[in-house]
Length: 241
Image (cartoon, rainbow, N blue to C red):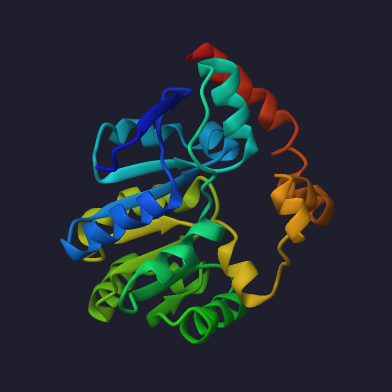
């Protein structure tokens, strides 16, 4: 296990570590052919994914902090800080870059055209061995066939882009029958890789305001997440402190 602290946010044991330590840990588990489910716990995850608690403690399930909301909760409730800000959008390409050889990657989720372009990005720009991909719509109707397809591909890493809580539930439901060593819930990552959505400017990211930029671009979809759901999140943090 990564030798860093676990900070309990609303009962969730969230690992406080750096991206380098996390990458080293994950790559070591892949090399040893151990299975890992890696979840990026932001405020939306804490509110919608309480079923994940039923799987814990389990060293094969790793939760890391994603976003300024988690930092605020740690400071208010625990009087502590997370070692780093970890999110799937930034960590995934970093992880690939830390591997000495290309990883065999399968992409799952998203609209068909978006997933296809994201697969091209992972192969041509990030230099990984994309062994297959499947959209989150028609391609997922036959789950046994999909599992067989992923296993036949020889994938080491499966990136699951369905959003909270669907991606986490899918990973937990199917990890036992998948041969892949790393299953990651990565939200909107394929949208960014495909060019369908834009990341915030660097200054906005440095100021930790990327959430505000996304709210500006998608107000109807994200307004509840960044208003009422934040109230629920903070209420849960204090309730289970």
